[in-house]
Length: 94
Length: 375
Image (tube, rainbow over all chains, first blue to last red; front, side, top):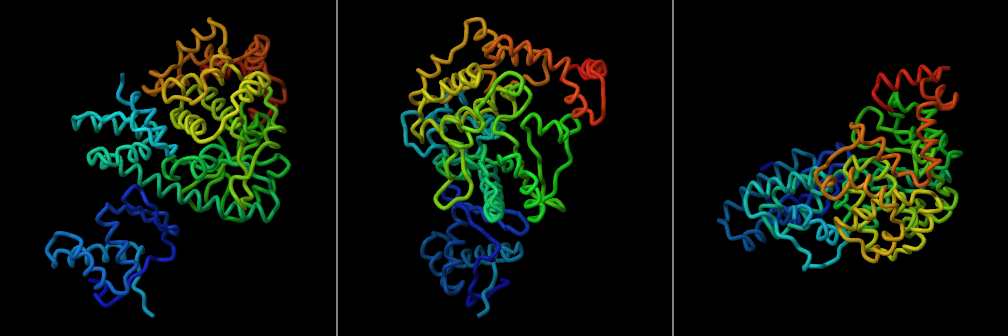
């Protein structure tokens, strides 16, 4: 994972979110590229960007989703990595 | 009934944010039928509203998700650009009236992403156009290359537009319009009261510098645009705009009829409103449609060219010779039709000079028409 479970992540300042039904599209205003999240990804995004730590978001997701705990960790790892590589998410370093 | 046709009234309800479950039309129950319907919706620019309508049907929602996401992202980009341009034009005290998608997507549709925007259309007063063009240049836009058949000098005379694109590439285009009603058809045959239209324009929202057309003028302008473009270029988007306007706002249909007749666009208005009513339903529009109805002969010619089935089938009149009698049949007054034909074949000298960018001859223009097979 490019970030640790103790890190906090935030949406990049150039990113705007738009609800599309129960999904979300993330638009990078600088590059004008966009990335769509399905309903599950939308929930991941919401928790990741509002939790104090990635680990807190993972814990919540493990309660909400009927999937093995380590699968949730892997899925969050993949999503965070993807979003950081696309410049949509940033690690907040206070 | 065709499955897209059956769905359109419900789509208009969804676009307007109205719950009317009795008008819901379920999608086909085969994968191929669903794929075909999704493709048709996308072709007509209705992918996003189709996605919203079928959000409880996983297969259809998945098929339409790409167009819904694309419209959401593109509209966000356009609206962010519009905010920036509006701020600049407000600072420069340049009046701007929003047309088409920029006017209806954020204000009228249940969600901005339901109405795909291709670009931003702004009606700027002719006196302010040079300053508006400079403002766009300062904001990173440059004038796009002109279509050789529509040179700038002719655009000004016909109430056309100047397209601007982002300098250095990038998404998004802005068109500065000389008029809300453009083209030679209206210039030769009709007389919209543009000063009154502009005076009636209202703020596009609280604390907004931009204005939008009044409801009745917006219906007339949209209907005119669909008709004069021979129902080409995704006409269902314009027809949907009218259907949503009729659902969301209180329409003074009497004013629509009065202005349509006074401006000599009654036939064009009738054709589009009747088609919209048959495809999607126009609340309270039936008396106006009956009132604007032209003669039986004219109705026969127009319905032979355009109707609900041809619109759904995306039948485009523009490349076929049928469009000439169609455009003539749209003209309210006989002598205006004669002028349209006469000036198309034998235009004014200034028109020829503006069209070809140099002093030319009428015979040369006729030869060019014959070579091109039309105007």
